[in-house]
Amino acid sequence: MAAKRNGAESKGSGRRGASPRSGQEPRSEPPLSLERIVATAVDLLDAEGVDGLKMRRLADRLGSGAMSLYWHVGNKEEVFDLALDSVLEYRGPSDIVESRDWRGEIVHMLEDWRASMLRHPWTASLLPRRALGPNILSRLELLSKTLSRAGVVDADLNVAIWSLWNFVIGATTTRANLDLSDDDRAAAQQRLTGLSQHYPTIERSRLLLDNDWDGAFSKGLDFLLDGLAPRQ
Amino acid sequence: MAAKRNGAESKGSGRRGASPRSGQEPRSEPPLSLERIVATAVDLLDAEGVDGLKMRRLADRLGSGAMSLYWHVGNKEEVFDLALDSVLEYRGPSDIVESRDWRGEIVHMLEDWRASMLRHPWTASLLPRRALGPNILSRLELLSKTLSRAGVVDADLNVAIWSLWNFVIGATTTRANLDLSDDDRAAAQQRLTGLSQHYPTIERSRLLLDNDWDGAFSKGLDFLLDGLAPRQ
DNA sequence: ACCTGAACACCGTTCAAGT
DNA sequence: ACCTGAACACCGTTCAAGT
Image (tube, rainbow over all chains, first blue to last red; front, side):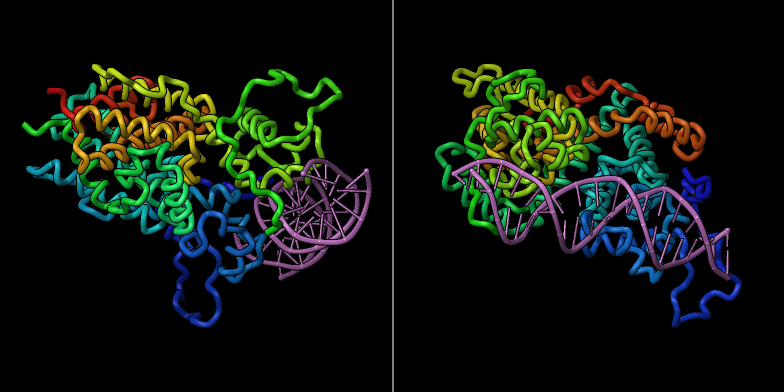
């Protein structure tokens, strides 16, 4: 309820706070800033996962008191939102002017999307439950534009986008979580072979042991694109 | 690490009837049991969401001391696992003998899957991050069998299953979470229209306002199936 | 075998206060 | 404007102990 913080907008590009004499203090910690907080949060999440991000630990890494964060940030949820979006910035060509190969473009965009998420596995748990930040929206916009230009009619556009979104989200969350713990995999294998009479088909196809995630993603994406916009 | 509990198997099918609406009126609580714990956990999750499940609160509803749960259950994670799987029991025809319409069967299975999850929105956050219980595996087995019978060659089987899995997971998590908070939706709309020059395409297609989730799911599923196994 | 209260080790956040 | 320590209200879980 405190009337203090209101920077919930993330200030768009941030960046304005460049101290005139910046770069003078290699020794001591630079002052707190939204940018530093977000960047450090990403590091922490990379290192310790979703459950590893605690406000006190984050403050520790920043060399500040735990409560100092709350001047820059409303609460922990906001840290999640900002970290998530910051990691999903699209660095590919922001616009494709002459897209002869629209399908290749889409495949590239989605594989980049997936790769960005797998580089930071915690995004898989967060993305589906959080608000969409500007970088995420940019990706959707570009995807949308490319599909539209590729000839997908307006009536099918949203279905196409959500289908691709679903595919990426599902693939990354599954990949990030099923793969993370080897002991779980081993246990699952044990259980499956033990109960192979109950699940003969998926046992035979080695569904849970198949770890060609990359191949499954690109092949599945191909199938989906075949359905969405068959090559003429 | 205590050597006590080991009933991690969930005892097969969970959740059979018993006192339907016996909240906490009668003073004579039945004794604690895994089944009661899981069923009550589901109720609690339905009512309060993932964050609403606390061991103390769960014990309250069961009319027991908070620590009593730990005799039946290893920890909170296990409660999540058991609740999740118990809710995903498939009640459809457990086997399709003469499946003329395999495609219809698959659509039915997946729409039932989605419906089961949306009836308990918290499953959307849990399913991708947890171990696969027997009911989930049964669904995968049946799906696998049907696809195989439909003529999907073994080499494509795993890709097909994971693609459909991805689609269902992505669709339900997105639906459950984006739809949950109306204020978020309003905020997103505001932001989007305010920044419509940045995201003209998705603004024009009203991507974030389109709430025909059911239609998007079945249409998208149709597209995906077209790609996976084109009707001859 | 089953259940329990007290207690520990946290964690997010409020508050009153410093500069 | 920015930062802080002390303190509060939790929460999962251990433990020693009850029946």
